[in-house]
Length: 568
Image (cartoon, rainbow, N blue to C red; front, top):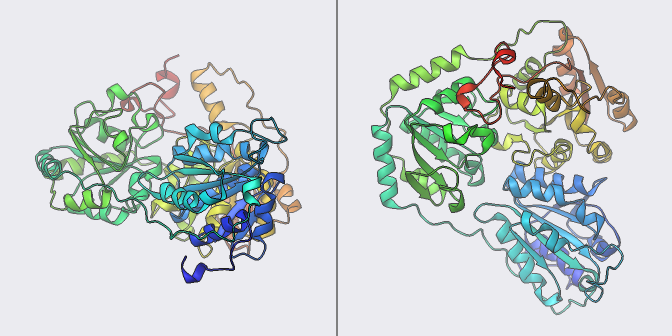
């Protein structure tokens, strides 16, 4: 154990666990105590670990999730057995599907009572097996150093993800003065890409007439943003991003076309549909990005770069597979050069001609214009934590992200209630950077208790709540695809959110008129500590453009086309 983490010998397993977490570099963890994890909480007293008490275990898991997304470090959350552990499950699943490194520590009944239906006993090991990279059930104190060592190594290696440690109470109180810790392990190294594949890829890029780079979150996970930007600039390749890849290129980058997919830009979707070479970097052909897969980039050969071999050719056969470390792969492609100046000009022309407009009719607040303006006046290093729904897509479309770690959003799982606890985690991981939450009136209510955590910790999170008194994305789909049969989407009995914030001792501003937008945004940013801007928007507002489900991305529709073009 290194000298800077050395402490007095552990009294018991709980103290040893605290020391093991400290040795792994953990300084903040999120949790909620209870009976089966109480020895661990006893051992926290006097340690170097800062424990953040959330008001619900789901909030703890999502805060650890946001902490990891914003920083790239392993997030840690803790809960007791039974309902404490089961309340973590959504946050664990979200981390698994979006490849977020986390270590999850759960209390468990004593090993002598396991299998007896003891009070708050739950097989969390079995319950979480499909949504973790690995699970550990600590049955002996002697295994603790190795288990913690392996949990952090696995969480951060390869394609990151969550790892569970189930910690029975009798192991927590077992004598541990004879135990010593292991040194933290670096993440596993990935293989080098095949030299023949690199050469073939370079030749394919040189001969392509209409190449497009399709970039995803894998670039962030590999900490390969700079090598990726150098590759695109040197090879002069038009580039699109996924939702989780926003920020891979800077907003005004000359080769950035935009986000592709269901609510992507028309220019990005049409570029991909018409390309003859698709260079996929750290992306996985998600259905929200590809639309109808059989009709996605129908004329393109595919070069696929990924650190997870399971993703290559899983959904679309790769003509040139390049499995391995993205840093090394992108460096291996450094000599690639395209010959597609005319194609690039056409892509940029399409981008300019299909750019969004912000002069919507009416006197009410237009959410896209508000978010665009907030993006312009907030510092470029602002971290934006977003919930799920229409506002999530408006943020993706209209906020200008300078780095992918500035954009925290639940991608694969689409977890409503993600935003507020994720913003909390992000603020703890990056205390010197501004953090903005964008949420909707549906999502905010799913973890609104975490306003208490924001207030208690005096976190300077600025919250923008877009309130249309409805479940907006569900309402939009019911309007477009279910014959306007509006079912269970009415939220007109919402509380007064500004008043509710004040109950939590958080200042709040209410915005209803478009002409007041600029002043309200500046007041929000200037308010010391936490603050909320409660924005009333039109319940009939939809997210455009849109690719209808199970349709080709070439069938992207805007508001004028939708009533006539969407099949029943």
